[in-house]
Image 1 (cartoon, rainbow, N blue to C red):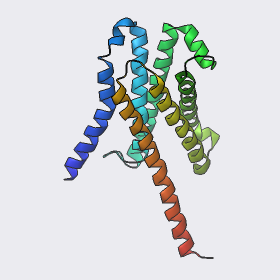
Image 2: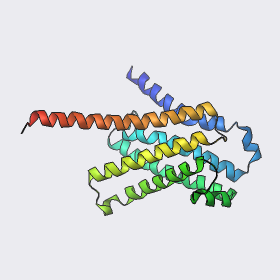
Image 3: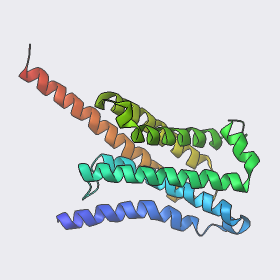
Image 4: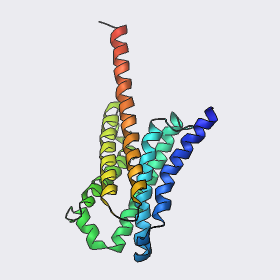
Length: 209
């Protein structure tokens, strides 16, 4: 029974991550765009998929990745997410520098653009904080608050950015992936709030003074 449950969980995660990419590969729009633009598009899809994995890993919901293993994988996936964003933005810059300049300066007429840029900077900020955390000497509490705040910005920005774009991604698979990203993030945050309440109740009960 346990092996079956593990297989179902990994099959669901694999489907959530790969199906949007596979369906995007069948889009008719690919033939009208250059190779660099298409690479940038798929890097963006991959980045959204990686955003789904992050809360699942840090929450310990993936079999075989609980505790330290999940945290290590969370760091590696974070690095892959940064790389995907760099490819996404770099490819779009090569394909159309004026559009990217407008986007980065928040002057783009497209509604999806500012959400993507904000999510991008939040991802970069998270990566820098993680890299320099020892030097900054952040204690666990401020680190968790900062990391959680940036994670909220990343999730909201990435999901809204993806939903507003009418591009190579198939509509229903994109919607499903975005819903899963929000649900996974909400699950982690909800569990942490619940744990804190349980711990605080336990402390007040054991030590009333």
